[in-house]
Image (cartoon, rainbow, N blue to C red):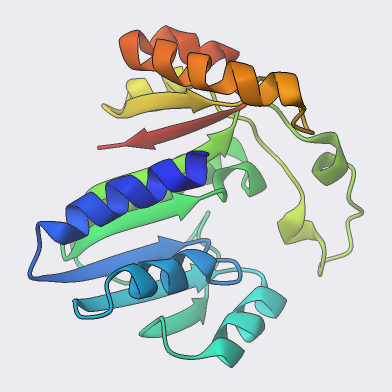
Length: 203
C-alpha cells in the first residue's frame, strides 16, 4: 500500500511540471524508475539512479531505457553529484533502513539540498531476516541497519503517514484490515505513525 502512496505523490508532482528531473537514491533494481516512465510515456523525464549494490545496478542496466544514468555510489557517505535545487524530485524508497542512522541523515540532507520535492520510506523496526544476514561484502548492502520513527522526519519538516503494523514482518488478513485505520489516524495526527510498520515522509 505504501508504494502506491509514493507513486501517487510522485505522479502528482510530475503532472504539474512540463519536464522533470528525478534522483532515485538507492534505486535497487530500478522498479520505481520503470514505473514512473510507464505512467508518463509522453513526458520529458530524466531519472538519475544511484545504488551501492552492484548486482542490482547490473540488473537494472540490462533492462535499459528508464534511467538516464545508473551509477554505483555510497549514498550514505557521498555527496550526490547534482547542484543545489537542480532536481525536481528526490526519492529514497526503502533504502534508509540499509544505512546506519548517521548515514541515513546524510542522505536526507543531500536529497533536501539537491531537490525541490523529496519523498522517502522507512520501516519503524529492524526486520530480523534482514538484520541477521552475514557480513559477506556482497550481502552487506541488503542488511537492515537502522529503524526510523515519525519524529525523525517531523523534526526535519516532513509530512508523515503510517502504513502496516509495527513489528509485523508478514502481513495477515487482520493486518490488511487494520492498516487503513492506521493510515487514516496518522492523517489526523502524525503521532499515530508510532503504531505503523512503515512510514512515508515527504515535503
